Amino acid sequence: MYRFFVDESQIGKQEIAITGSDVNHIRNVLRMKPGERVTVSDGKKADYCCRIREVGSQTVIADILETEEAGGELPARIHLFQGLPKSDKMELIIQKAVELGVCQVIPTVTKRTVVKLDKKKEETKIRRWNSIAESAAKQSGRGRIPQVTEVMTLRQALASAKDFDVKVIPFEHARGMEETTRQLERIRPGMDVGIFIGPEGGFEDEEIFLAESEGVTPVSLGKRILRTETAGLMILSVIGYLLETRG
Ligand code: SAM
Image (cartoon, rainbow, N blue to C red; front, side, top):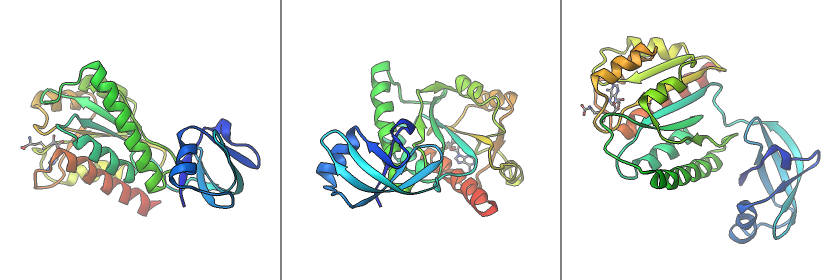
């Protein structure tokens, strides 16, 4: 069933008013008719199973048939601080991270970041990355649309994560999986978790020391060197598995 996201203000007692670009999608792309069913999410906690009543030029009215708790969310909020990668790898990372349950993706500039984005380019990229996040959220049945924030420096990223409950920086020179297990086993529902992934060239040692001084733990992701676009997805998968199996 197709999924659409609305603001809470569009949700009434018995009906929901879908507006904006979704109206064109429903009318002219999906060519949906009154009587057909859709899932509408308020982007926070609830999914509404609805039946389309009216397809107008600006608004689609859907009657609420049943309401259930948004199912597509992990019970902890995972924030991926992704070292800005080259070319369009970020699009793949965002799409897959959203499918895997990430709550927020923060593009992060580090010493070995090759990509240089001026303000204009950054704004264009952020808009594109958020639209990828929205499509991935719809496709994967998320209860909310994860946000791709503005680009941060590593220092800004560390500051924004200062009150998080668990913070790890995967570092290919970290030894053994004991610390990785220890950190990931600490994650519990309701927590905020920060994951810091370096760009293609990795982190400088001084960046690892800086992160450690801010309470972020270097962890190994195993004996192989993972590409920047693989590393974040790997640890997200493990965290998602632990949270979904532990409940
Ligand atoms: N400097 C690395 C090298 O030797 O080629 C490349 C860095 S890797 C492409 C990019 C990022 O993925 C790293 O900064 C780290 O965050 C993460 N990463 C990759 N493999 C890892 C591993 N085995 N353990 C921990 N982190 C890893």
